Length: 189
Image (tube, rainbow, N blue to C red):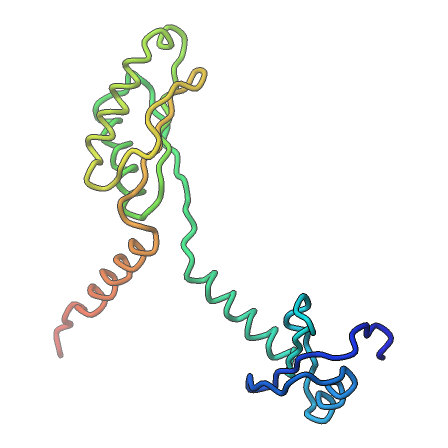
């Protein structure tokens, strides 16, 4: 059991965080066995190394729960993509703009791609103007995170939301709760 022990003594910390002091490694192991706890090395680089008496299984479980809770509260940034053409119909533009508005309200980033074909490639200013128009139309919901740049046959721009994903989720939940509280009245018989 004690084959791997290389240090003669350790600084021992009790189960409630109290300082026990510097004790021999054998005494520390004996104290851990008597208290039915584990002897866990906390700071290996200290001289002498610091060890703590604790229930290691419980410690691992609690730290896993904290990590899980932190991940649950963390918002994942999602990039949605909208593709347009330089000669887009006004109604189609309004539809695409509606999608961008919906994505920004949900707290997602939007990557707007304009695809050029054939002779359209010689007129990149058409795509640039279209992207500027879209950015101006959704200005109150988002900001231009990455300005328009030509990438081969495509022109790309990224629009980020003013609201964070978590804020958008909280707002949506509050609106849903408010609607849920105002149930329509059912006539009594």
